[in-house]
Amino acid sequence: MDFELSEEQLAFQATAREFARESLAPRAAQWDEQQTFPVDALRAAAALGFAGIYVREDVGGSGLKRLDAALIFEELAAACPSTAAYISIHNMATWMIDRFGGEAQRNRFCPRLAGMEHFASYCLTEPGAGSDAASLATRAVRDGDHYVLNGTKAFISGGGSSDVYVCMVRTGGAGADGISCIAVEKDTPGLTFGKKERKLGWNSQPTAMVMFQDCRVPVANRIGAEGEGFKIAMQGLDGGRINIAACSLGGARACLEAATAHIGERSQFGRKLAEFQGLQFQIADMATELDAARLMVHRAAAKLDASDPEATMHCAMAKRFATDACFEVVDRALQLHGGYGYIKDYPIERYLRDLRVHRILEGTNEIMRVIIARRLLRASNR
Image 1 (spheres, rainbow, N blue to C red):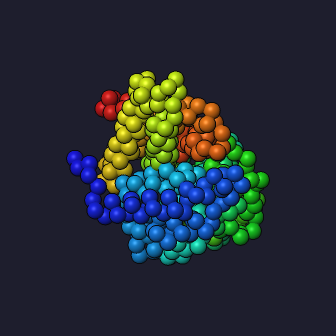
Image 2 (image 1 turned 90 degrees about the vertical axis):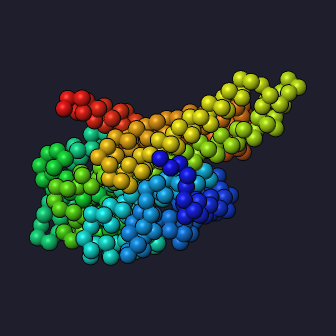
Image 3 (image 1 turned 60 degrees about the vertical axis):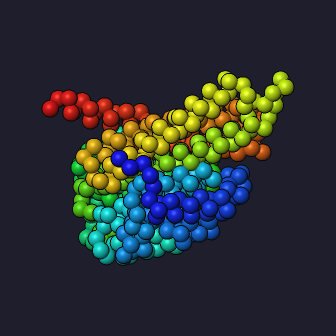
């Protein structure tokens, strides 16, 4: 086991850190306050290779690994978790086309997605199908060389702003085997969007319903074979869980650094806060939990890179632990700031709002426990 990063990893980690510090951090609060989708900043990130991190190089991707992506997303999220999270979702959707699409689809979609000339969204959740994703009801009926789509997707990051929607739809019977994956382009007749959702956090990315009413999509836009959509969606989520956990790492690290600096500067009762042992213990626990979370995320990424048969379980473990632990780190950092942590002149409250949703999306942390328990019980019954 080698815990040291390679020279190449250190180089792109430093590049991501510098970009985040110079291009994301100074404007993150404004984007949050004004609910701005920062297109120019996103395309600047893409110019550095961050929009197709583990997409193959022949279609414009960076050809890196999942561990490399985790390093990059931690750095980006240390400046703006909301923007970093959208980039992570875009990467997931683009990878699904690269991994499961045919050559014509890869060459048609991926180059513009890898450069963020076009933006991508991942569409699985529906108003009546959240954690029970295999019960989704959006239907695609074959009509010659087209599918006719009817239904609604909910809570879609990039909804209304993205150019390509990687959608899970029902082409067959009930259950997971009846689901297929189709890429729907923004200007397709019959595709409309709901209102922009008003959210607690993640305000630098729009969220909206994606609605289909007799929406005709070419069969040529189907990713993979009919009936493979649920498998494609779940494989996408393995990586998505690592990415969102890495975004939690970045947000928590920024808040830990801010809290450490704050207690080193502020005095009460005639002493620096950092001189009180109780607060020293809190900082020590926060750092320990953050480091444990990072180790779990990096191990899960390494398992996924190696196509380990237990990768899905490790991704679920890392996502569950890291998003819970990192939210607690941010909450403690806010407490250590006292009243200052609660006002918008300080960034802690924004990190708290942004990281809260990480425990819900890419599969709730309760569903992560289901995935882990099922795998353990299946192994015990062999």
